View 1 (cartoon, helix red, strand yellow):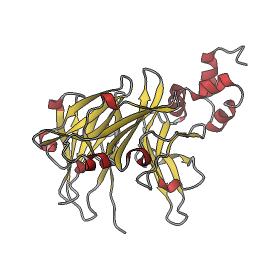
View 2 (tube, helix red, strand yellow):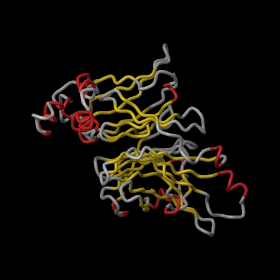
View 3 (cartoon, rainbow, N blue to C red):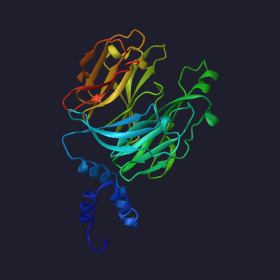
View 4 (cartoon, rainbow, N blue to C red):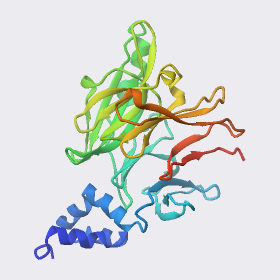
Length: 336
């Protein structure tokens, strides 16, 4: 059929098919497989099959207390927050230990997080029910000793490649060289096209990182909260950005009131489609939670505090994101 139908017609047909049929089409020939695996097709097919184009989707991890089983599901951003589709899990065993690093164009990056030094990363395509376990990174406990690591995920539109990024702070090296105030950091990046890790430490700045901090993938860049320490011992919080296409690093200054706070209290998130926000939560004093938004990306002066959430008896709420109508989606721990 590929000899008679142009690519545009095939893609139009594929877009109208349900997920199960897409999986079968992958087995017909290599040409069809390449069309279906294209990242732009994954994203466009997902939006094509959503009944309401005005309702964005949230990816949720569902854990059953009775069976201890885990599933993922997509939920509409509508008034009922109704479920769109159950996705299941890409693992047969130990699926409770995985968390979502991020998603892009319908592809989800999962990370094993039960043990501090576990190096299992999985790229999962729920549309075609296929997953890929990444090769072991180069920076491990066996090679570099104890460390803290941040993991980010995103799509490089320049090379049409999915990339996983690891920023690793080497604790053993710093302990052995206490007189040296400079941080010991290794940075490596995984390319799905190459199916391999590559070290880019030579071009990386040496920042203190927030262990297991959240990431925000915006404008082709992975963002994290980091701390920059001066020779005089002073520290300053900022947002560290890593452009996956050009593989360069840049700083985004935080509001003055957040620059000197404990960085462990700060969380960066994606706001709308083209900028970032920061949530400030004080776990020690259980004070109010502040939400800031950089209304114009890259412009420090555009930081604006848009919301303050008061204390409540269940503890400090976690902001998961913003709904289309502007409401904040919060995760509350009720304690019972």
